[in-house]
Amino acid sequence: DASLLSSGRRPGTEEDAWASLSWLNPTLLWSVRSRRPPLPEMMTPLKSCMAAVGYRYDDIRNLPSFLDGDALFETPAGTLEITPSYEVKSGRANVAFSLTDSRKGRWFGVAKISNKAKRVVESVRASYRTSYSGGIVNSLTVEPSFDIEKVEPSVTLSAASASGRTTAVCKWNTKDPTLTIVHAIDDRNTLSPELSLPTGKITFDWEAELDSGSITARIDPASFIQVKWTDHSLSGKWVCDATIPLESAGGPIAADVRVRRR
Image 1 (cartoon, rainbow, N blue to C red):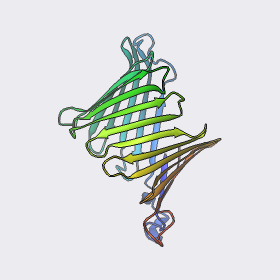
Image 2: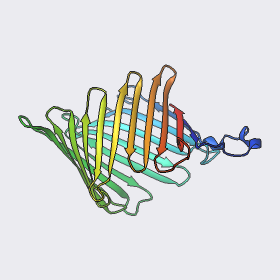
Image 3: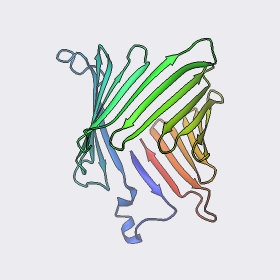
Image 4: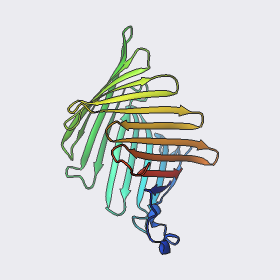
C-alpha cells in the first residue's frame, strides 16, 4: 500500500526531488494467511492464522515499523479472535480479544489490552441484537463501550426498519452525540445524513456502488467535501482520496489528493 500526497506544490528542491522518495511517505505491507486449519492435529480449535509486517519509509529506515497477527478459534462459547500488534518505534504492544456468537450472530464482546495502558485493559465493547416481527422495526441493536484509558463511556442504539432499507443510529457519548439516518435509495446508492445533537450541525454521507468499485463522499456544507473512489482492476485495487475545501476562495481546487494501489 503506497500512498502519494499532493498539495499543489512539489516538495523539496529541484536538486533533491528526483533522488529522494521521502516526500512520498510510502507504506509497504507484507502478510501471509492460512487457507485451512494450520494445526489440525495439535490444536483443533485453531481455524486460521495471519501474520503481517509493515514498513513506513518515514518511520524507522532499517527496521519494520509494525507487526500484526491474527488467530481464529472455534470454542463452545463462540468464535474467539485474538489480534496482537506491535509498534516497533514506540514499543507499544496491543492485544485485542473478541468473542462472537457463531450460531446466530446476535452478540459479541471485545476487550483490548496494552502494555502502555495505565490499567492494562484499554477499552471494552459489547453488542447485542434482538429481532422483531410484525412491526415497522425489524431489529434493535445495543452497543455499549467504555474507553478505560480516557474514562469515556458511550453507547450506540440502532433500529432497522422492516423493509431493510432504513436504519436509525443514535450514538451517545460525552463529547458529541449524534443521530444518523441511513437510507438505501436503491440497490447502489445509500444516503446518510448525520445530526450533531449538541450543535445542530448536519453532515451528509453518500455511497455509490459501481460495476468495478465504489465512490463514497462526506459533505460538510460549511467546511469541506471528502471523496473516495475505489476501483478494482485486473492489476489490483486503486484508491483515490480527495478533500475539497469550501471555505477558502481562490485557493487550490483540491487541497489534499492521495492515490494509492493495494
